Length: 133
Image 1: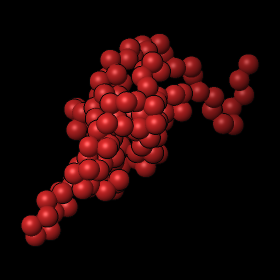
Image 2: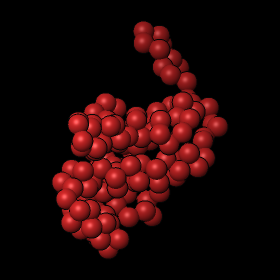
Image 3: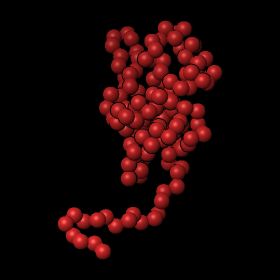
């Protein structure tokens, strides 16, 4: 996962924390996108058809994905070309960054579900108020 552009230890740690101890609850990449707050929600009004990002979900995971997108905007030629093309079409910066966030969430979800789960038992927890040898 660390081999992907823009993904560092902080991003990986935050996404693993977001998934938690039960990764089986994420049945699809759409569920992961909703959990991270990067799922597109229709925000149309009248003749205007547009989307916005879900304001719910884990804000820290959303920030981690946003950090990856900003890094790719700075370093990746394809992402910069996409950004220039979409802003030339009249989209705002916020609307232009929304699509790469969903793409990054899709990419990272595939990596996260492919991680091997540890089958080693957790160490016994120490109980408060009891003497242990």
